[in-house]
Length: 219
Image (tube, rainbow, N blue to C red; front, side, top):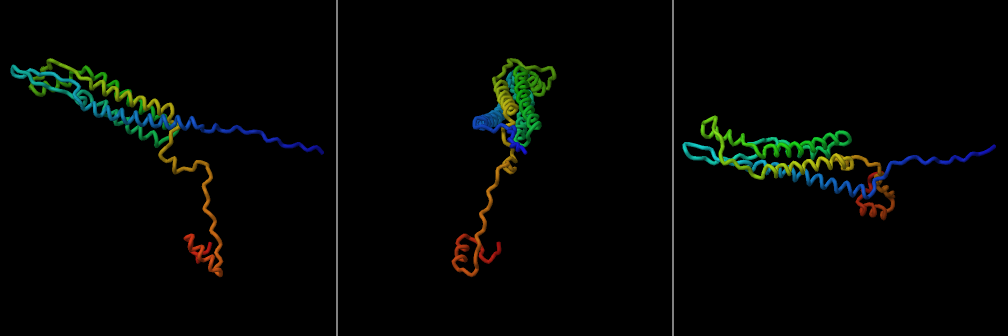
């Protein structure tokens, strides 16, 4: 009778996470958080600054008027808030949901930047203020000037966009909020077995008390 020895066939194994992967994950995570938070802060602050200024004719004189970013368009600030929410939500989801949220983060930054650029040369907000101030619906603004704050707002939107692109590229490597509460497959350390205490031996009783155990409790 011939005996055939069984040769184990190597099974494919999942690629282990290398040190470079972990390092890249940490760097992209830190960069994404920094870019997203900084971008949203810049957009919210810059959209509250003066974007345009001019003078409205009133009774033979002129009245200086200004319009901030919220007067021109409230879209950049609203999208910055959406971007902040998406930045937090990225760490609460995983898989396809994380890609969707990362895409929302990127689109929020893109929309904030584009809307700020479109409002950089806007004069409608000042014309509306002039009409309200003078009571003349046909009143317009003279000596119209625009500031650089719309472009600062657009730069903040670009930072949010970059954070979204990082989340789309590296988000699958980022941890989730509940990750530390889940089992990762590694064996958990077992509690040390309770030493046997012989009630007839006083030295065992004293040793149990020194360990903080109750010698009268049965194992």
